[in-house]
Amino acid sequence: MQNLYYHFCHSIMRHAQNCSVFCNRHFRLILAGILVLALCVRVGYWLISPTLARDAVTYLYYAEHFTEMSSHGFWSPLFIWYLHLMSVYGYDPVPAGIVLNIVAGVMTVLVIYNILQECGIKKLWCILSSLLAATNPFLVQCSVELLRESSSLLFFSLSCCEMVKYLRTPNNFAVSLAGVFGAFAFLCRYETLEIAAYSIVMIIAVNVSPRFHRKSLCCGILLYAGCLAGGIILLELVMGLPADYVLKGLEWRL
Figure (cartoon, rainbow, N blue to C red):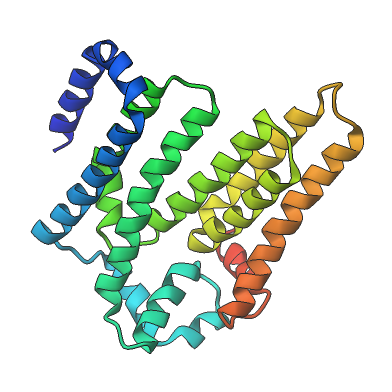
């Protein structure tokens, strides 16, 4: 499958320039088609080859015994809490979790397009990148397994998108949203905490310019950190977990 994908990528790049004018005129229609393609590929792969990963068995156990998670904090809780909610309301958590991951995978394709567009890249390359993301075997597989990767990638991408907007036009709304999406990404997978370091570097890079006052640098960092930490604590309380849950999880990682 990977060899077929690489051949597909090579063919697209070879004929890309011939499609430049068409992409500029009909990019909305093409993007909608790519999203439909991403959805069809993921649903088709799920129907043809349904799998249940080893970690998914653990997630399903803690979805039924969610209160046991508060004692150790090892697992990032947001995706498991969603499975727990589905069980509480009488839905089968396996298809419910996979549907969520498929939707997250399709939305990630759209976010990738927006990130590249915010970077000022031509529509042709934005569309081609979205097409490659829509058909990437790794991303497709993440979307059809009962794992946390698909949802964490979506929130990670959303946080990156807001930081790119902040780089172009510094404003408090974008940096606040970046912190909120970063909190969601972190609670999906602890490994995404590195986005906080990248974001703070971006804030510093923007505000070292002579056009900006030193106060804007402090305000940007504090606003981002406040939204990130506040979002994590608020989500912990909504899930019924102790406020120090993620600290226990980070201790396990260290």
